[in-house]
Length: 230
View 1 (cartoon, rainbow, N blue to C red):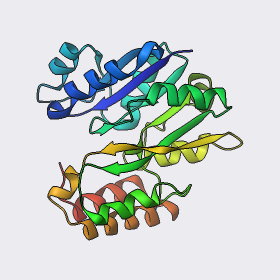
View 2: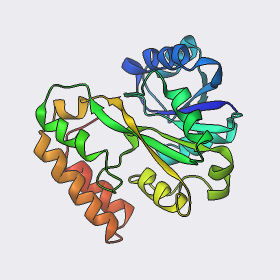
View 3: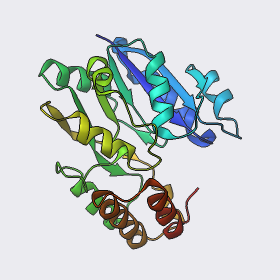
């Protein structure tokens, strides 16, 4: 079996080249390809990802769900691995994933660690070890077998926020879901323009809205109103 890494991007020039090279260097013979699926970047994301060795495509539709689905439609590996552009999985990601597959897991994620010494972010890291909605995030990366991904119908293209939460809660029913003891290293750039408390309040509000069935438009509007980010 082989792994297809799929990275949705939008204006990720500062991070994309080093990420692609890192994934290539650490992917071992298990890595089949890296697909960067772009949503209309206005910077050098595409050129840099191509020069780093990734297969780079323009998604017909912007939005993380649509971009990940499009990347998956082009992937040829038996395992899909979705990675955000500002996240570094452990160097052992390929063998970790394959070991989990051999153990009978169909999908899973890492815990969280942050590129910051803030003790407050260590609380976030601690929460990520628990199998709860509040402890999960797309930045932790996600692996899934191609077979299960196709059976599930993929991500919901209509979602602009909480797409990974919805996908996992729908897809993992009656399936083995792995949470690795290791952590993915996540950029703390969101915290450069927002306080830790503001971000936690925004996340808490969106999760509550999601659980109560709020519309995508209202959640996106609420999130953008609370945070100064990208």
